[in-house]
Amino acid sequence: MLSSIASAFAVLKQASDVLQSFQNAKTEMEIHQKTTELYGIISSIYPELISTQEAHAAAKSRIAELEGEIARQKDWEAEKQRYTLHQHPLGALTYRLKEAQPDGAPVYDLCTNCYQEGIKSILQYAGASGFVVRHQCPRCHTEFLTGKVHFQA
Image: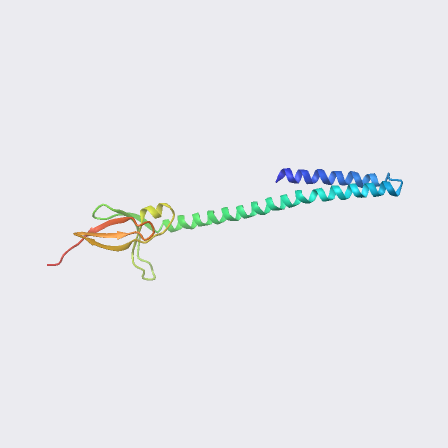
């Protein structure tokens, strides 16, 4: 982008020189030649200006994209503070909501794999196998052995 700007200034300098040479032109033919030369110089600047404008638009778009990513990361960092690493009786690790929410939402567990990727995926009950309770991540399908089945006598 800087080279385009430098090129544009060089072309403007050329145009300025041609305009100054108009003062020395004596005949209509010389004026016509200088006018044609000036049009050529002016038209040569358009591709440089378009290129610079496109580079500027791309840079603005990238900046907006990066600002959005920074905002998402800050939001996730704040959200992460609501969870703590929890070890279940059979050893499985999940991220558990630290406390019940004021709106009455239940305490729940998040998938550790998805959590590390900055994604909040709530584990879902996947049934019991033998004497073991299973929960599964709906996003990455990782299974967690979260407890033992207790039979009532």
